[in-house]
Image (tube, rainbow, N blue to C red; front, side, top):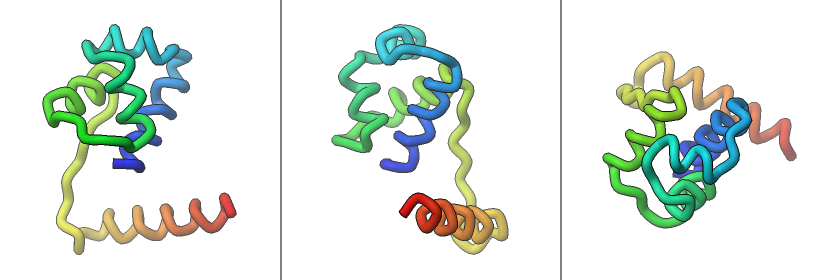
Length: 84
């Protein structure tokens, strides 16, 4: 959920939305959106999907052995190394 939260925050900031405005736009509380962005606690699936939809994001599920997953793992590992 940490990765999801980072993407949600990045998308919100790319849209120049304050957290309270994004929460109102997506129909969740500021507390829930903050917990989601920080990867803390659990968030109901319907709330998560509402936030993603409201911010123009999509959740994509792929088999772990799908070629796109390998590319994402490699990109993520490279990003982690670059940020050290």
